[in-house]
Length: 332
Image (cartoon, rainbow, N blue to C red; front, side):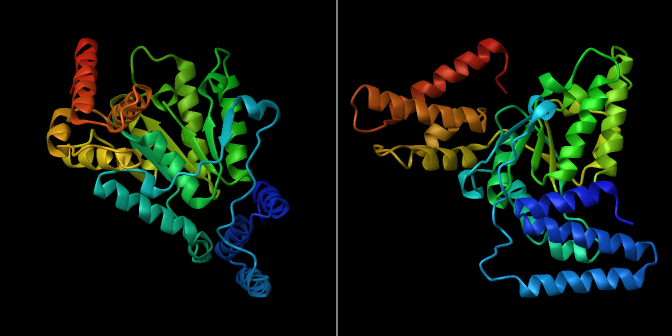
């Protein structure tokens, strides 16, 4: 028999007009009945779904964006909702990472077909790497490509000093994950996923991690769950096997920085720039810092009525940023 969560999600997806989610849940229910040995019922459910899809008016689209989620009540203090418009073309990623995200997007677009075989598309991702390398932006791109809302978990609302309260709030978040399809991001994930064996770790943090491990393992929703951290070394080892993919980001090399500069500066007039030299000078900066340097150079050109961005503009900003990082002890 279908679980209460599945029934609630089925009704909610129908009300919201999220056809893809509706069919996917229905396929989950059929697969569940088949595993229980109810072959006839499973076959009847699949036949009904196929018939409904065949008779659906052609104006319907499987990729139609679902209505923007608007968390209410206690959930509004736990989730921040947005509807990103970013696409893969807006990001500059190392080729291996880019290919993995393209595969995830393809699987998500074929979610109903994959579910019909009793399988699950990749949907639980752990993103690790230095700050500014594209982890949070990747969540926005996934949401934008799939027409889904991005819901960022508010850690300040989730983590409290009262025993048991954080785990209860975590349950509210996972109920939302099950009921409303979206891309859910746990940023700065090390705050709840740190190693249970650390000597300075308090019992409540261990209980929170145990709760998270149980909830993410039990999750069978169509939502995408992302956890991002700059400190993978302090994560509990048990977390890694709960995720379908662990994607590791790194600082861009000269080739990637070159691409970032060209794409970021393409909307403004530029003089003939020695991109190779600038990229060499900028090596060691993150994706976000390289983008900021381009933006600052364009803003300076606008403010001072210069019609072009020059090599000197960019090289001065690179040197200034590297000097700051050296002072902070952050230079790679």
